[in-house]
Structures are given as C-alpha cells and as structure tokens.
Length: 190
Image (cartoon, rainbow, N blue to C red; front, side):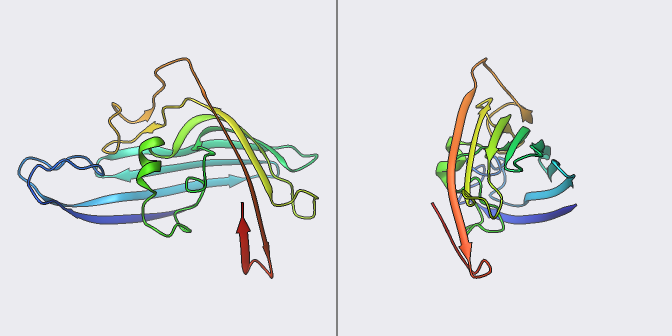
C-alpha cells in the first residue's frame, strides 16, 4: 500500500476564466486551492499474478485510476496478460512514472490525444528475464476501448468511470529496449 497527495494553487487573470486543468473557474472567482492528485494504491503480488487497485480522491470526486490483474506464464516467465483499467502502452511519456518525470505534468499532446492516460482493455506483454538473450526488450500489444477514462473535473465526458460509446476497439502496440550497466548507474532506452 502506498499513496501521495499533490496540492496546487491556481490564479487566473479574470473571474470565471475558462481553464484546461481542473475545470472552469466559478463566476466570482479567479483563484483557488485544489488537490491536483491524491492517490492510494493497493498492489498484491503472488507468484505468477499481480492485482492493482489505485484510486484518486480530490474535492471534485473519487475515481479509479488503475484496476487490473496481470498474469504471467509459469514456463518462460516472460509473457504476461494484463486486463482491466491501465496505462495505454503508447509512447514514452505515458509509461513513465510520475516519480521519474522531469515535469509535474505530462505534455499537452498526451493530455489531449490520450486523456487521463488510461483506458479499459487487455494487453499481452513480452519481456524476457535477466540472463535471457533478449533481456531488455519489452513488447506490449493490446486492444482498448479507445475512449480513455472520464475523471470528474478533467474531461468533457459525462460522469466518472470508463465510457465506451461504440463497438470499435483501438489496437495499441509498443516495442521498447532498455538496458543498464554498472549497477544501474547508467541506462539507455530505444
């Protein structure tokens, strides 16, 4: 179990200003304190499975951030099936933890193209263990609803939760190679 809180203060030039993050200001206000993120994460690891539930709670509401099960094959120990609400396997920035990011927020490109970074779906992952010939390679491929998750105060979608408005699914795939040496002092990725 772990968690963290990220508070913020926002100030606009005029009362009732339209804003991208946190929803528009009310008619008589041009500044406010907010909770940007407040997360609590529960992770259970078993021999070949992992279960994750992460919740975000702010003054705008409570929503599920991650809710998935991950099952690994016991033979190669390098093939995994993950299903539920999870990060989309797209690009570099979404996969990067908030702890490792250079900036407090993801780029505007990511925020617009992939709202709230997460979606409901199922994904296969190939990631060989240390000592295997392809160690360092990670390939993710999955099908997702394509709509992302709706979070109160951060999207134009009605309500919170996972909303799918059509029968089409998005295929998202990602191949990544990352190695380190000298006790992980140096790392490179492609």
